[in-house]
Image (cartoon, rainbow, N blue to C red):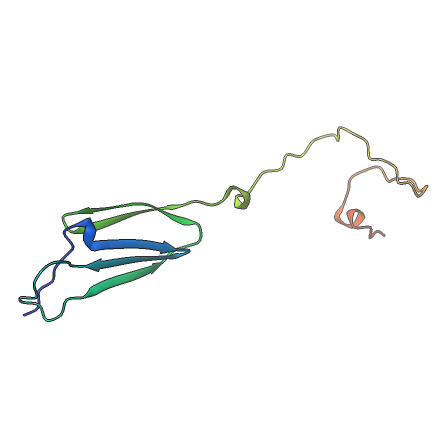
Length: 115
């Protein structure tokens, strides 16, 4: 006869996170093998998305709850760039003696390719 046993103590569980892999390992400790065909270590791994952090874990009535938070680093978040209606300073003239074109900057004029 095989019986299913759930962890009853946080000491019987281990939770580890390595980069984007969360692993839960459980092992019953200190009990005899009466009625069990096999008793060993059980583990389960979960693939997490990038930038997911483990925030905590709890065990209540044999139910393990794991808290996760998706935290995007500030440098990866989109930023809004304000566009001024009128530039505060006039563009400087080039030292080559050529006149600087006044007016809007386009993708072509910014890269030096023009008509």
